Length: 262
Image 1: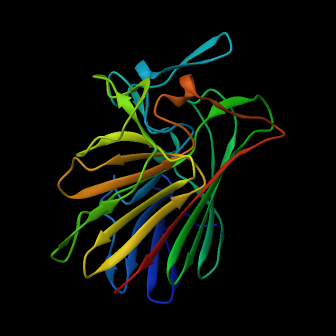
Image 2: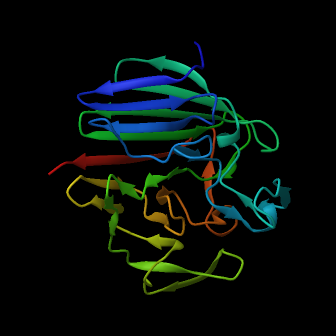
């Protein structure tokens, strides 16, 4: 199938996907209002086969050390799939399935499948990583850039994490869990009952980001946007908390964004 942009619609919600641009959600409009920051680097991109930073771009798998390109020196950040062209496997009016085959510099063969489903009041993103050969550690996550303001209304974040990962000077978790600190944040939080973060633009729209996963990175240090990133492990997790993909057991994760208007 063609890898041109895809538009899904349900009620007055509309999603645009860019398979050629890293399989990202390029736009989400509700009642004609765009919720995501626009631009080639923004929207919402999949973080896979790892999330956030890998310290010095190195991770170990058994006795083997692998080196990823340092695209956020001195670290590697946000996986490789966001830089590739995905394939469109299936499209209906309100659902699309995209796939991406892992290639160098990632050292293992595998396939990523992302299912995007739209309803009039929600967007659900489901991603899986499969292999039919060597097992390997991996992570799944999403990196949405929500507009900080909708019209004249500035976003308010609401969430109640159980802990915050202490962040070192190198921007990576130190391994120590601390009580959540006030923002601004570029930090990872633990939510053992599942990710549950609400973004409210007073008088305009309320949107809740949920996931069964217990890790979420919140980044609100930019003027134009805030990021709420559910993921299957913390930054540098390929080294500290690896999840293994095997021929018998893929890695899967889902996030849902649900919105309502006053």
